[in-house]
Structure formats: structure tokens, C-alpha cells
Amino acid sequence: MILTVTMNPSVDISYPLEEFNLDTVNRVAKVSKTPGGKGLNVTRVLKQLDDEVVATGLIGGALGTDIKEKLLQTGIKNDFFEISGETRNCIAILHEGNQTEILEKGPTITKSESENFLKHFEELVKNENTKIIAISGSLPDGLETNYYSKMIGICEKYEKPVVLDCSGKALIEVLKNNYKPKVIKPNTEELSQLIGKDVSKNPNELKEILKDKLFEKIEWIIVSLGADGAFAKHNDKFYKVNVPKIEVVNPVGSGDSTVAGITSAIHENASDETLLRKANVLGMLNAMEKLTGFVNLDKYEELFKKIEIINL
Ligand code: ADP
Image (cartoon, rainbow, N blue to C red; front, side, top):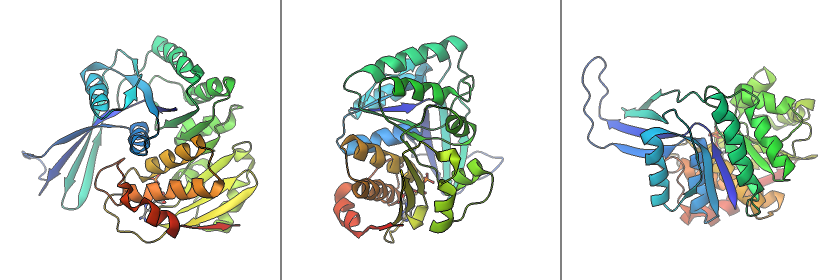
């Protein structure tokens, strides 16, 4: 079983508008409200792959209850920890080919909630059915920047591997700490943030960057490169992944779909090549759909074969 973690989930609201008028009323007829947050996108893709998955994280208030109900309606098991704060809404206004987003910050976590979630998490990690943990997204207010390190420490205690997809201070803190995730998946923007300078998509440059001490003891570093595929380091092996040209509809959530592919491949002990193909196919399939964290698997085999993996 795969355990996914979403520490600051949301109800994602999409408002499609022909025209977005400022400083006046905009009426919207076709509203969609879905459980959101990067970890829940990962969860949805894993569910579509038929992998056994349980979603956890922090949840609260009426919107929290709504998320849990919606997940159960789609057959997704979950075991969230209840907090006193209210789970947030995130609004995307789709207008004239643009996407204007209004993202609520979300609840502030209290000290006792912060401590008690770690106990809840430990129980889930300890469970013999839990084989791997995928942690995605930002930390809500109230949790210290080293909170993911504490969670990874718990996973290490039970020898369970972690796939981590986060950015900024939370990721820097993890890289400085002794407990290491098995995989990280930064995109080039996140990698630039980490090393404090601009990063190109040049494989030779990426190879040098990933040899840095900062990444020591992290088994897999997979840098996703959008339409340029990915660059990966597995221990002392380096790979460039080239992907075919596709018709992109909405690339939001492609990285989450990639994380689902990585986690699923490790869960089934796949080879390096299969892992990289699966991760990139799922990223592509997400980009080809309107919905975030949704893939149409009909084209899976065709794209899987078209991907090129080069050893560097
Ligand atoms: P993130 O969403 O984290 O920024 P990316 O945009 O790099 O991640 O996308 C993740 C993966 O999805 C890429 O490695 C690639 O396999 C696939 N992908 C995303 N955008 C495209 C695109 N325009 N064309 C082909 N593949 C894409």
C-alpha cells in the first residue's frame, strides 16, 4: 500500500468565465469543486493506476468533511488527522485563455496538533501494509520548516522509503538534515531556488549540479523539464529522458502525476528505465487533459514506447 501525504489540502474551485470583469459582478454557471492539493493529485493518479493507496494529512471544518466524502465517493481510502482550523478553498478563474488564481493560505496548526499528527503518521507508517510514502506540497502555517524532516525520520525508523516533492525552505531543511528521502523531484525553478542561481536544461550542467554535496545520500533526484522530459540521477548513474511532442491541454499537475509514476514504480520494484518511462508518461498524460491529477490511460503504452532514455 502507498501512503500519500497532503498537509495543506484544499477544495479547488474552478470558475470558467467567458470574460472576467474587474470591479463588477461576474456570474458563473458551471462551477466545479474537487479535492485539491499536490498530494491529493498524486493520490488520484495512483488510484487510476489501480495501486492501493491511502491519503493522509491534516483536515478540518466543513470543507474538510467535504473532501473526505468526495474521496470516498471515488473509492479513495483516507485517514486524515482532524484539526481545529478550517481547510481552505483555492479558486481558479478561467477566462479568455488565462487562469487567475486566488489561493487561501489555509489554517494555522497548533503546537499540540503538530505533535499529535506525528503520532497519527507514525501509526500509519508502522502498518505492515504501508510500503512507501509520497509527501507533496507546502507546509501550513504553524508547522516548523523542519517538519518534513521529522516525518522522514519516522519513515526511516521503519525503513520505509519516501518520495518527497516540496520546495523552498521545507526542502532546504530536508537536504540539511540527516534523514533523507529516497527520491526528490524538483523542476528547474525549484532547483534554481535550492542552489541560489539560474539553472538551464543542459544535461551536462545538470549533471554537475546534481553531483553537489547538497544531494548526497539521496538515491534518486529526478529533475522534471516540462516539454524537455527529465534529467535524473540514480546513485552514480545519470539519465536524460526525452519525451515525444504532445498536444498540451493543461500542464498543471503534471509534476504530481510524475510523482505518482515514480512512487508506483518503486512500489512494484521496477527497473530504472521503467521507472523513468512510467513517471514521464504519466506527466504527459496529465498535460493532455483539462483536469488536474487526471490521466487517460488509453495512450499509456504508445507513449511509453516513444520515450527515449539516454545513459550519460
Ligand atoms: P512540474 O509540474 O512539477 O513543474 P513539469 O512541468 O516538469 O513538472 O512536468 C512533469 C513531467 O510531465 C515532465 O517531466 C514531462 O514528462 C511531462 N510534461 C509536462 N509538460 C509537458 C509538455 N509540454 N510536453 C511533454 N511532456 C510534458
